[in-house]
Image (cartoon, rainbow, N blue to C red; front, side, top):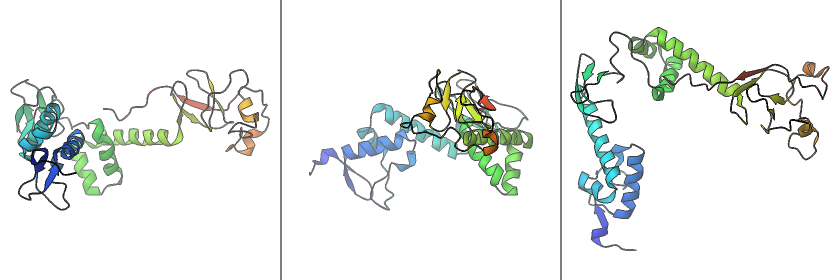
Length: 265
């Protein structure tokens, strides 16, 4: 359906024209996802950008203010020696001198590299959002990349973070969460009827169903159960000798009864 010119937006200098309603949806998604460099003409291989007035016409005031602030921060960061204040409620332009910035508005003193509070000669500390990416580079990168990271963050700190990163990966790959209290549990041996050491429920290791406290083994004896006759599925034959179906012993179960957030710095 054709629309009046007042309901359309024309990009310059390409002169491609699109409906304002469509561009409002497109711009809103890009701004919400932080893609400030993608407010361009949707035409394939066209680099024409929307100007601030066009953006303001089609998106809400909140989204426009957010885009305007992100654009300013991006511009300041590209200048190198000028950065926005790291405090979200401030964002005042700050001049970086010898790696240090002091906001003239809120007086916050910070490091121009990691943007945390000023730490003097101590190595920079990683933000949680950067930890995984940096660790992947440090573990599998080239020697030059590792040396560069060690110069910036310190070898001792990076080695400690690496150990925590590998431990977290191990837990994610080898543990499951209790279906009731969400405690991390690693099954070392024994049958598939598990006992959570935090909340004391019984549950099935295979399907993670909470089992009946009075008769947890019914889950494995019921022909209609998805785990029928699978009490020992995946268990070594040597572990099955001497098992009594009424025995409450599940073998060795290691219960990680705390939230594992080792990369939240």
